[in-house]
Length: 107
Image (tube, rainbow, N blue to C red):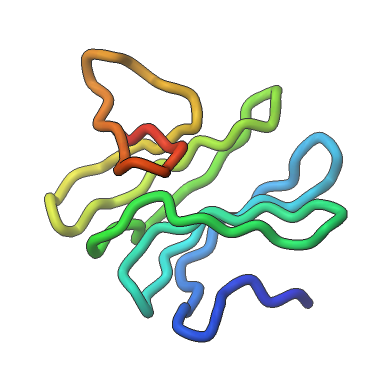
């Protein structure tokens, strides 16, 4: 079994999918920092990134499209909203762009 989280993190409420190459992708709530995180594994190991911060990410559900691009539906407890995160821009009119340096678009 591989370890995904760092010292401060605690993976909770995990959603797992395998891509077309049978590589795992995981969306999870890091209860140690109150963040939604996304991890994918390839030949070099796990790659983890923060998708959204601020008591968000509980009840996440991950899906992959036909090109293995991730989409994550999750609960934002801070705003009481259901949100969708995607690497692809979903809609210019309804997308809340994540802070600089993040590649995720948040609705």
